[in-house]
Image 1 (cartoon, rainbow, N blue to C red):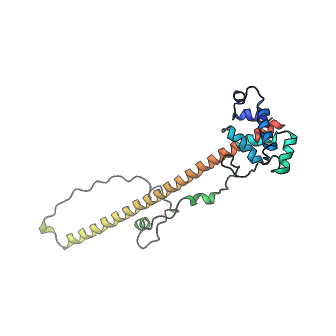
Image 2 (image 1 turned 30 degrees about the horizontal axis):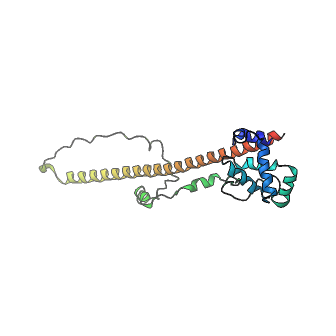
Image 3 (image 1 turned 90 degrees about the horizontal axis):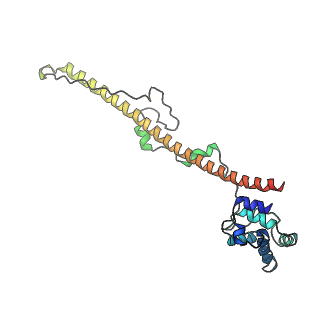
Length: 236
């Protein structure tokens, strides 16, 4: 089982290293000398012995190999070191322990970025005398998001000074006030759309990063699951 497990993971080229010895017996001999002569009883330390000799081997094959030692050596390890088959060794830079994936939920996804907009942007996008604009919850109608057509200005009509009476100046004042209100309303609407779009961009970037992290964590969990499945399927 151990030979098939190690060769299936392709972590060692056994025959090229020790062509005259059986690969498992060769490594078991190293482990036996460590136990009997050097009095090394810790599974973690025995794993490090293998990993120092072959750098590309991972933690799971080391544990599987240590667990395949003869009963007499294994009894010494069990009596003086961690329990048999322990998959939670002490932390080590060369043989890091397996950690459980962090738990995440939908409520924590929006906390990866600051949802509070800039107060200056809110002030520029709020109508004076009304409730402050909230880019986090505001929804625009389809008409608000439609592209506005370009309206050409009317050709100016020059009025002689002799015709500029009180009626003319009153009409001119009303027209200027209406134009100013229209420009202010359009500017506020554009600012609202801009602030809302900026918020959605930040939220989208945070959600994309969250999805990428979850996919990465999912891939890592799948790899760990595949290793355990391959290990226990071969035992059946």
